[in-house]
Length: 312
Image 1 (cartoon, helix red, strand yellow):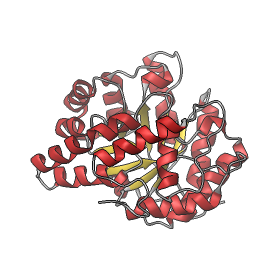
Image 2: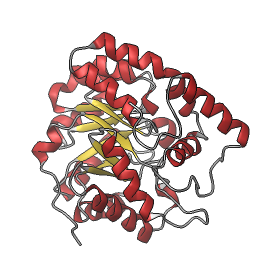
Image 3: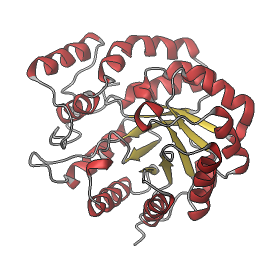
Image 4: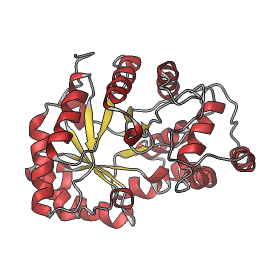
């Protein structure tokens, strides 16, 4: 089943800006909330994002059945209606499973897939995996480089080779220290490898200064990241830095390990983007004290958690 034509490779090559990693909304009893996917998509587009990324860690992809995964991809692509591209996360135990997920995403109208690496394999095997995945679909493949969660490091040299020879032209790069790795990739690959940052936006300013073209992350005030990127792209580096510094306390607080998903879903619920902040087990929930603490940080940086529309 194909819902819509995938964006062209040319449009992918021009991709830049903020691609929000979206959560998967659930009802209070843990069922998929497809209606909230539609409201979340409209919310993100109103915030000015360049695209949507789904079924990453924030999307609780590992907690979904295959049938639910299909429903989620179809719902996001359908709600986007071609207004922005939808990129889909791929993670499997082997090449066959990754290809199956990527082909389904393509058939459902995804603009690209961002793929986790193979676990505990050599650089040669990792290269072969990504190259075969790229050959298996017509939409582009993005490397998802997140060793703190995947347990697998992808060297700058391997990234550059994939850009030069493997048909994989982009990376979502989330390995601190981010600056040095971005610079090394650019030194080795030049324009053959485009770099998106991540890590909650914590290093967004430095990523842009080192040559990243944008970020793929799940910060629940996406308009903040959009504003920083737009200022930077316009040459207003001081303005981008001032905006980044203003909101850093919230960016830092929201990107807490283990509880970040719960914080983000709570914010999205309070902002009216989703109906419920439920997450599936296993996963930490926030308590009332944490909710009050989060709300205080939001207020301290001059935002409103109950604003029904993007706050900037």
